[in-house]
View 1: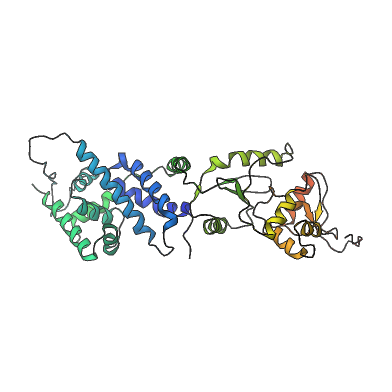
View 2 (view 1 turned 120 degrees about the horizontal axis):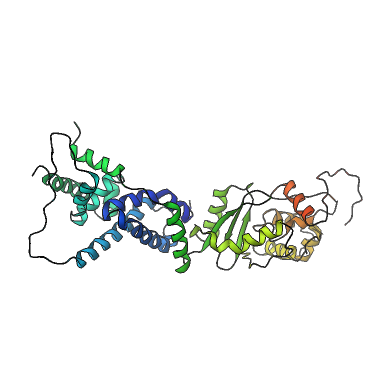
Length: 161
Length: 217
């Protein structure tokens, strides 16, 4: 079983990768980071063993590129002499609607630390399994579950304040 | 009872904006070419012989397939035998597509694009090279081609080499016919072979082998 033609690889995974990036870095930058991801994938593609889990592999690259962008943004941020902004308060936690609108919720996710942010976006934007999330993050399945759990916990702590 | 936060996250995921896949594809192809990563570019083209799949390496056009061949199988063969870096990238194929259009319209007799014959080697490549020497409107036989390729008794092998010609039309295997006067085989099917021979003005035999004609060797 050989590697599929790269175009087929893109056709199969491109939509999901872009959805992950739209969640992780926001819709404005998602296209650019997708391009960087796919070009990096194209460069490395011929070196891959034919048995590679291509889905986990491409998300590993995408996550790295997303982290790069987050770091670049953090470096560009103007330092201010105030405490870090708390996660926005979401009304109605635990009692049902109203729930936060999409932009607000993903903004909160984007402010999580890198591992938790990746776990939450991979789980909810593209429905990767805990094992696959572990592969992408380079950690055990258990550690991936913990990151996801912690991330959700932090998001909930931002509710109802 | 489902967790409201998880529900909200799933709903939020559904409302993430969708990409412009076509635009992204074009930009990706251009960037891949700029960075020297476009090992195999492919494109489709309409033609009087139906949709064609064309592929080119940096060396030249490496494949022309009719729709009788399964597109996925053609791309997988390219991934296996040339490079897995196979991308839809029509720009590289523009000169070839333009020349094919002119050829089919009767405005061009010879192609002027570099060809990459790497999908055939040894005897098969020599068969293709001998075939490439047959001019527009000309004919030759499997026997003659086998001889030119250095194996005068390898007539069946020459037939096989032409049956798997990776570059139909560019390497004019339609101009190779059996000495018997029948039409002979063609990977794109007899109608396409006949169409090409008639385009070039030579007329085309019927497929029948029982025409009672003299056997000329």
